[in-house]
Each structure stands twice: as structure tokens, then as C-alpha cells.
Image 1 (spheres, rainbow, N blue to C red):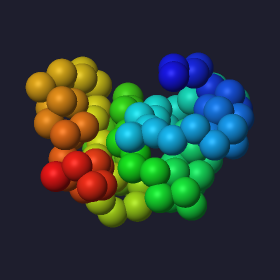
Image 2 (image 1 turned 180 degrees about the vertical axis):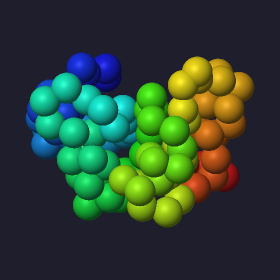
Image 3 (image 1 turned 90 degrees about the vertical axis):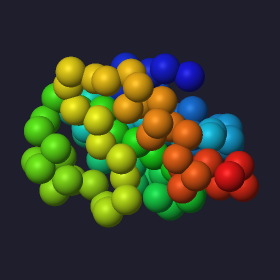
Image 4 (image 1 turned 60 degrees about the horizontal axis):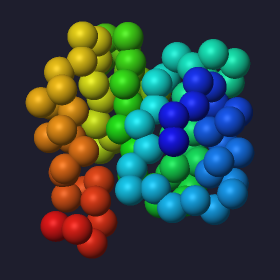
Length: 92
């Protein structure tokens, strides 16, 4: 379910939808993507980050273990990240 800002994403998550993984942009308009990442952590929902920031800067905003993909996005790397066993509990 794509959204363009954190507010709609949080509302969708509040509706008790189950997600295999949430892909978040740290630089969302309005509320920052960090709010969505915090909600993912609280609900044990796996998350990955897309960002225009360099990886070193993005790491300052993310807890260890969250995959970070920086621009330009590499679709092969994205596919590898989304299929990591750590992101897919019970689906190893």
C-alpha cells in the first residue's frame, strides 16, 4: 500500500493491517519517516529504508539491522534485501 507521507502510512498501520515488510523513505514530507520506523519497531514489523541520504548519515537515524538502500536504487539489491530471512519471520 503506497503512501506519500508518514500520516497516511501510520493510519494504515493503525487499522491493524499485517505487512510482510514496510519500506520507508527517511525524508517523507510532513512527519519524518523515522516515525514510521518507530511504529514498525513497536509492532515487530520488519522494515527497510530507501533514502537520498548517504548510507553513513542514514545509519544515524536507523537502529542496527535495518537495511538501507541509497539512491540510485539497485533493484537486485532491493530484491535481495526483501528476501532476507530476518525480514521475513517464519519464511526462511
